[in-house]
Image (cartoon, rainbow, N blue to C red; front, side, top):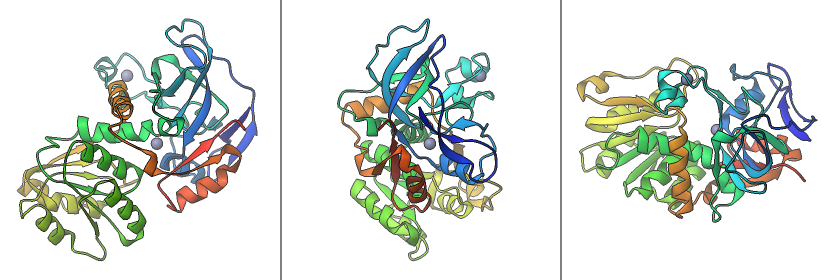
Length: 344
Ligand SMILES: [Zn+2]
Ligand SMILES: [Zn+2]
């Protein structure tokens, strides 16, 4: 089968190669992959900027498909069933976090696409315990976006503090920022989204998705726009999705006293942040990292009920053979989310 693999460390070394199709072992399922999303992590692996990658390994952790083969000791699934796979390939199963259903925090957590072969291939072997049925009304393309949606659902519904108590700020209108927006809009929270003038198209999309106000911080005064939007009170909560220290400083400055800030974006290194507002206003600053099984259930329930529509975020779906073009478009931020379609 064709698989897009990181063959060695360093920059590049990503190729579409022919490898034998693996057979599912006990507790595993072979999926015929129908759609797989390109994420920032895949781009970082391609560029040689992600040191957790264990080459040679098949890329891709955002994928949906059909059950093709069942391994031993697997029950409850049938060939041909439409499913999504959680991105977590394994966890220790014995630590306090695994015990409490918070395996996202397990020190031994491994994910598909960098620790274990992932979904940018015609077939993928996954653990049956990480599968979820894809509701009939949800396309494989939206299925491939359940992983980033679950990141947003975790950040808002599970890590947000009293997120529905007042207006919200989102900084960084990339795929995750826009998914955070969808979840907040669905919850009825009035939201301001900010970015830079490079994000103009993404901010326009934010408006179509339900943002009440958008701000380009290099052209407009975010502080003034925030005071107007919140009648001088400040935001109840903010989600920082850009990973820029200056954006976290702005979030701390523009939330109200005892407001909360959830840091979702990764800075990739030490960031310079003005922490005085955190102290003076008693702001709660929290992190949010990926998701747990319960988050996937909540995310799929929202999609299945039709409460959320992810299709406006899908920029294009390319055949797997055209991966390089799709990676380049993703890297150049020419759209929001690019998908790959294996198996043609
Ligand atoms: Zn991702
Ligand atoms: Zn564990």
